[in-house]
Length: 117
Image (cartoon, rainbow, N blue to C red; front, side, top):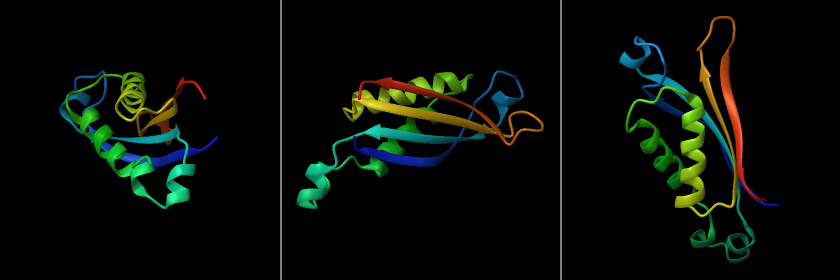
């Protein structure tokens, strides 16, 4: 199975359940594994057959920064739905990390997989 990967996409947004969190921007780090048949793009050396990680990254950044969100679980679901519907990706694994969310942990996060391989 082929995959297109994005690692540690940094998104500054309003995220959290506490009132003080709703007043500031925080960083989320997003990892994506997206099932994609890369053979046509590779054989033709043609960008038109590739899944453009720049376009995906810009779309997700816009989506997640549109409005405040309380839960990283919601962020993960929004990302999975967007990737599958907007880019016709049959399977996606999404990891959303929130650095510095709790003391004594570098980061906290969630991981989901949606679709079929």
